[in-house]
Length: 380
Image (tube, rainbow, N blue to C red; front, side, top):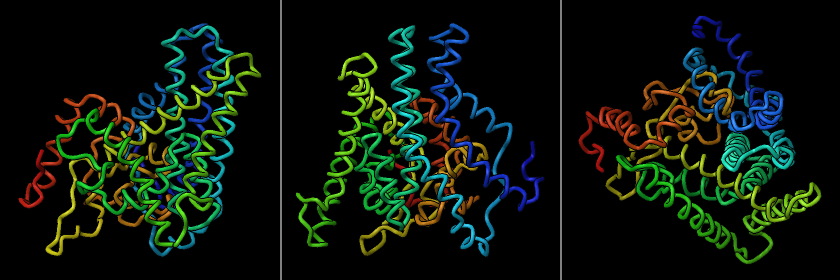
């Protein structure tokens, strides 16, 4: 299918309702449960969500091709204010909150699962968390309304990654594509070297940044105005609620708590792997005054495959997001002159798990991108 042949205004209308595909990942774990019981192939369908996200979606991406439409700048103000788009992202908070308890309940009912199949199912639930809680939380924390800010923080709390609300905005967006940013992977750095540092640094840096922010406001760090305390309190409260729910459903309290933190770990690991993909090997020039140049579209890898753009609220148009962080997802633009990933995020995610394959594909692209600029030539 050649999407470029569709009238641009028609394409924008298709995209408007295409974002409703965000419901699909929320439904995948229950669908896998029912398909497993319908077919009696329990192990096969325990990982059905993973097959859809990392197998079927990438294939459909290749079939549908790339998104041919950028919004006309004269339409951006009106498009940005349309309530429909805001309601979609805000709806993810109650939907995911209900979802994780549903997924836990189904896990207990799915007694035919082997330990391996149970792991696949929990990984599936965490993948939904990465797509819905973290991805949508990321969209919301960049917005300037209190409602969206709080909803974004609560979504992140549902996967125990509230620090991202502070570190991402005040750390990552300031230091992106520099050695100071733990979420910007270096040239020739493997994923498994990147992840432990990203986990630890981003958690600690969130508290460091929050302390500095509160000092500038004249507020006490150890006090009720520290939002991180509240959001992490929500995480532990929800884990306790999950434990209590498991006791009502005939299981042990600790199992519910373990399920909550397991899905959280998978979700924020997905986030950090996507961070690894988004900035691999790219770097900003340091100027004579010791500061780094302003963030531009060329400091993030871009991908413009249509289906995954719908699936992820256009997160793949990451170059525009970093250059203009306050732009809402529906008006993000594709920059053809920014570095381009060869595939959509889901495919690149799988490739990143195999470091030799990743380096074979991505290192030549990094080198080619900086071929005419010796000062920015990549160094291991």
